[in-house]
Image (tube, rainbow, N blue to C red; front, side, top):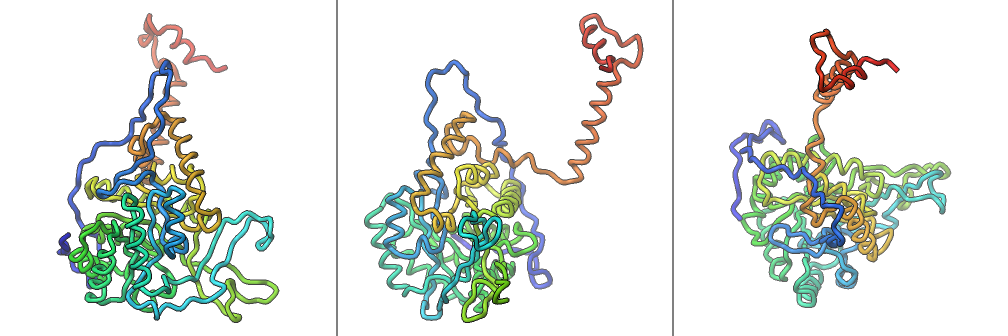
Length: 420
């Protein structure tokens, strides 16, 4: 993969507007409807093909605790997840020091109630603190035991070309199928010019993506931060710099809350805390909006060869269907696994198939992106509604003149002028 350079100056504006080639693509709208007389309905096929990789279903373990070591990643494959993205690794794990507690939850009703439903989850956890050599050994073991399953390495490094090149070379030697670049961790790592510090700076992002794609020989996904005004700008830069896919969103910068008894913030570590990443059900609508914006940009400016992985608050098949309807090829789950376990994938697959049967969809591609054309600007909504109101008024007015009566439509024309 060669690095693509942008001709627009990036010094004055860290995230410039970039003019790209418009690609005409066939609309995915047009649901498949089968004749009701069919005696048998075809079983929905959840198989997806993304960047040359085939997955049995679109459900992917998102980078984080569910992919932190061999044992849990093996569990994910055994339970049937479509792919696994390991917890993010870097060259020097000794610099990664986690604290405990590092999670805090938001529940419906009185927060802290043991019976309240969890709708929000904050973490101040860093990337993998395990030695890189250990993680690489486990990647290799997993690929040897599951050669037909998709294993994706999530990587992150400091602003250093040689370090990125070394890390890419070492993870690729294990046989992993793709790489996800963590440009989006919102806490801890940005202090070292890593994670969101890169994803929020389009000039730095373009340069780093250039290093990565000049070195990598497997598909590369860029994981985007939602903690930015316009998420399409860094996504566009990453794709133009050679990345094959976009993953969105990572967690949202947050403060979970204050303990009103101790007056200390949560999660509380030795009486103190720090803002962290927010996930779970409450972020789902925000994630949908970000994915929708990226998908519209990709549809207008890039080819079908590029992929999109939706992330944010997925706990049901319906949650996943929404991401796919907006154009996502795959759907990642991290916090959902931490709350419900690896067996969640069976429920997700079953519920997604139920949705597909309801609409007579045979494959994921039958409905991927089908809802995307129905988003427009508020100005356009006003225009359309005013036009519709005028049309309804015209119908209610009936005939304007006696010369407008017709023989064929006489009854309907009469009805159009009746008031009750």
